Image (cartoon, rainbow, N blue to C red):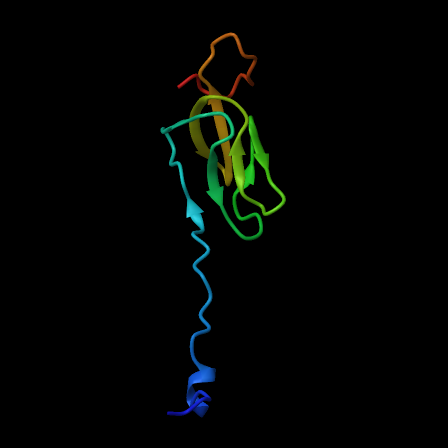
Length: 92
């Protein structure tokens, strides 16, 4: 029996793992604090109110609330009515 691998076998077996990019929570869905909303490369979708951009450009919710996509940005409308928010952000 051969003690070395065949020539062709060393060229196989190298495939990259999937990155699982995309939107994780859509508009109108409820986001818990710290949950990922979008995983992306670069910033095609920018962070808005109550949204944090991580070092890998993924967007995370800073508080519990409803996700809102508006004008290329993603916002989180806080679930707590006592939390201050901009006047233009709907309480939805």
